[in-house]
Length: 239
Image (cartoon, rainbow, N blue to C red):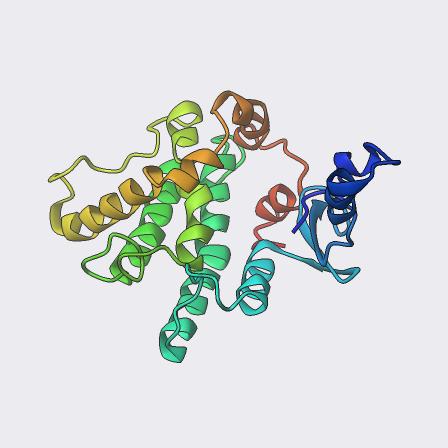
């Protein structure tokens, strides 16, 4: 699978012969899968498959799961019932967690009839509901290995620091042992997020914080012009 339409090597040694020519020819073979952005929206991942486009991250992930069924790490459970449960909670992240994340982040005291404490409480509630649905042993949602539902939540879990950086009172989650009657749920959440934060693949695909600051400053000031930011201002869900 290529991540860009053209291989740099395809322009090297056009008159190559022997083994060198074989290598160049292999690099010039048409790719069945090309991952890029820009077909649907510049910020939306797009997969070109046999010159046909697909977009939306979760759709692409499920598609790749079907195209490469022999891959050792499955993104969805093999059991049909558990696979359905995965889709329910993946949708929960998209329809509940992400809008709540942005309502909390975009809150402006002089523009909202709700105090930020209410939006923080709402966001916490969604995280705990997610945690309560997890496998009790973990560390991931379905147990020992991460699935698509974990990877859908992960980017937002990895950015919880933005609340501490931009919002009065910060993220506000209780420290270990201080969650009161919700401590069991918070403990499961801490176990999950620790597993996510320390997973090598997550570390290698998460940018340093300084690269997020200019982007999230606009959300924190409620002036971002993305479709998601606009939908949040209008009280709508993820567009």
